[in-house]
Amino acid sequence: MITIDNYLDSHYIHRSNWLRAAVLGANDGIISVSSLAIGIAAASTSRDPILLATVAGLVAGALSMAAGEYVSVGSQTDIEKADIERERQELEAMPEAELRILAEIYERRGLKKETALQVAKELTETNALATHVRDELGINELSQANPIQAAFASGAAFMVGGLLPLLVTIFAPVYNMEYFLYGFTILSLIALGAVSAKTGGSSKRKAVVRIVVWGTIAMGLSAFVGYIFDINV
Image 1 (spheres, rainbow, N blue to C red):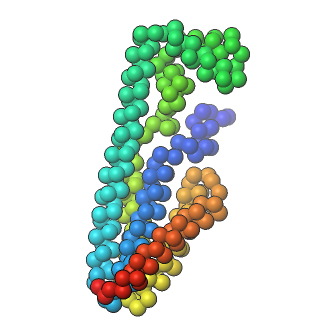
Image 2 (cartoon, rainbow, N blue to C red):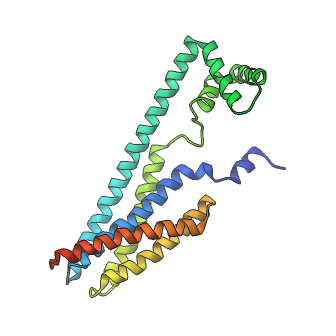
Image 3 (cartoon, rainbow, N blue to C red):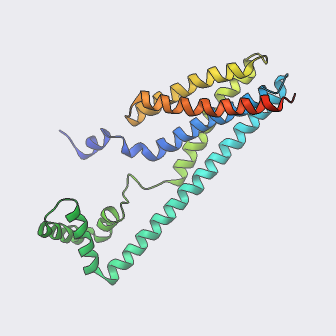
């Protein structure tokens, strides 16, 4: 027997908020820390400055990602709350006008005028504010942002992603370390793209190509900066 919970479990949209933050954090952690390490490795003849830059980038990046995600999603949440409060006031001040707006929305979605008005009346009688928030403002439980969840997912994912290039800077030989970093990072990005696509139910090939291409560009530019300055760190 198919229930609403089983139906929702078969789709992936309810994962979009935390999955977006986690993928962004892990991707940024891998690419940012790797790019930083590659840039320093291209201009360095010893391991210590590479390790120092990598650790600093890892810590600062994770905190920055978490704080930035919290502020960004928090701002989105504030806007949603303000819109909901504004809608509540409009429903109290002009319920008939709001009813017509709702009916017009259903009409544009394909219902006949009389049916749209009847649906709007019945839904409004059940819970007017919730109906307008969902159908007029487009805000629902699946799309509502959670600042703490997004911040934690993004910061933790950045830390996990950034640990991968850090391990390379610890164990790989200093000579030509940038090539080890690049190779290991590409493998990490391929794995991340495949996992994110699997979790989100989307195309693995498309996700892997997208993440690897942009990661390669970022690391290539970082290495180029290290080479053109030609400074021994």
